[in-house]
Length: 107
Length: 147
Image (cartoon, rainbow over all chains, first blue to last red; front, side, top):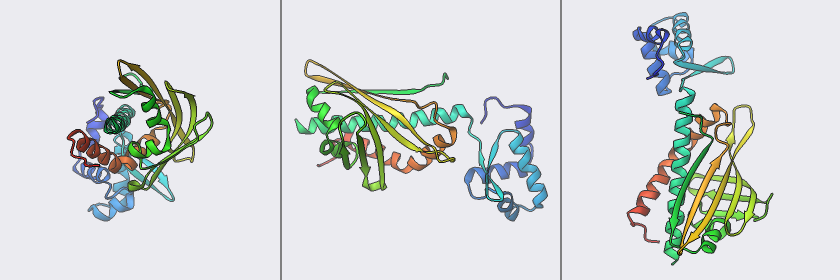
């Protein structure tokens, strides 16, 4: 996971409930405190506390939408930039190969 | 990894430079390999649109440089960030012919200044389209296409 794993990261993952929250947020099935509260056998207050711990460790981040925060797994800026560049490069590779194929078909 | 602002890719084709130039800049040719529909107003400031009917998507570009037959550049709108700002990158094609082979270099720059939320959103939105591109590429390379 994160290469710069800090104590906070380990601490955040030292709890089966938080690991389950992380899994559910990563899968995108439950991404708000109330959605998580509906599927986990703990109180909403406890969910909030665990979510805050995960957020403080930089494992998830929330975007405010209406009255609630929707959480997603935090991808470090570096990983995100790399994914993005790889994605654009692959699009251009595919496009250039189609161009070459088109030009060679014509001759 | 240093922060990278540009992607550079190139390919060589056994085709005269003028023909490659037309494939890049003339709508009827663009619609054959880049997308499946295209409109091009070939002058700096002109609009270029490329459509992919399969994904119900259109890319809108503003032509920046037209130097036939060696240099063609446009700004490509890559999407809108959460605050509604429209972001674009610059795509530059540079052509060079030697012994009947034309090298096409494409540089897409201005990538690192795009906001993080747009990176993520664009990747997610394009995820299915991008698998399609790879499939197209695989089919082409295996010579299975019968057009």
